[in-house]
Image (tube, rainbow, N blue to C red; front, side, top):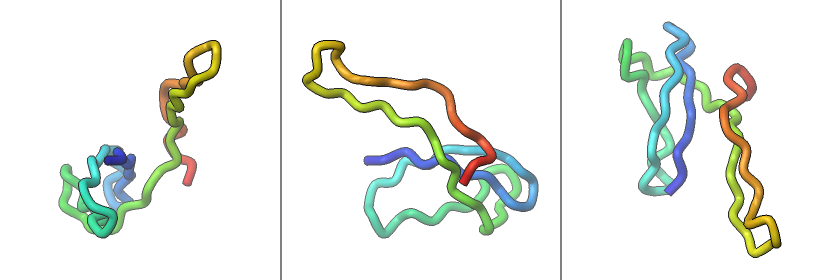
Length: 65
């Protein structure tokens, strides 16, 4: 289940949404209720079987889409 980051186009509030199904990717701003939000590009974490145990970056790239 992915977690998507969104930013409201009305009040600029940033928030995250846990998506349970692939057809449930729409979100409303929890602060003002506005339905026009844009999904932001976020860093991801990949866990693998490499010798270093994977690669992980923290933080986000708020403002990028």
